[in-house]
Image (cartoon, rainbow, N blue to C red; front, side):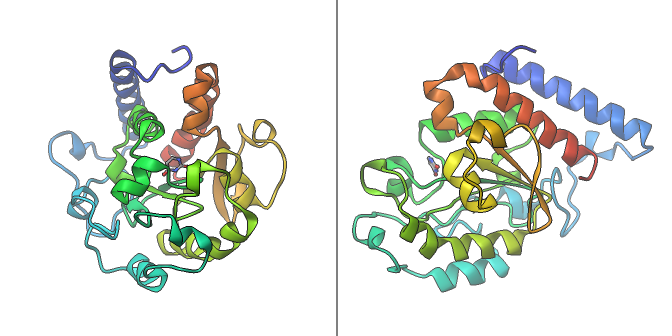
Length: 250
Ligand code: URA
């Protein structure tokens, strides 16, 4: 496949290819292929299992109505006024998805659409992220999606260091609650904040780093891909490494 176009036909081809690979790997490993005939519903199971929790509609809190360690983090964040962004935000965007996800995407900060809806990655960049997730053979509900900042910087300006410093403890606690197998840091701000590195994203991407013992893959932000579609090929390379790590149980 060439540079991922994330169009419907390519998505379908990608899904077929992912399924074929998974069937082959599971067959080789002697794992049961029972998911071909019935939905997997193992309580507490992560990842590809589609549980009732994972498919419930996202609620106001982004917790899918779950009582969990994440819920505690959400409660403590409350109607946050720890930095100046609370004055200009419409909605706080905590994050959403599977609280037991194997894979967490961390973006930069909510934009206008996210600010209006209180949900992460629902605008144009979010639609592209959803296509990337689906091209990986996953559903949006199976992963967890959040940001470094929970509130929109006015005019989508870059996050300020004091805003990151106020918000980061909550991201750290979200990641500690989910404890995914892989984190995908979307873009420069997310990669720099999580890795405490100032290296360019072009240097960081393409290989795994470690965040608190969790494998972390930096890659380009979907908003960058909208402006630079040529970089989709590189993102596809990065997410293939993630898919391989998840298939191998990391
Ligand atoms: N960009 C981000 O980094 N996060 C969002 O939630 C939306 C756009």
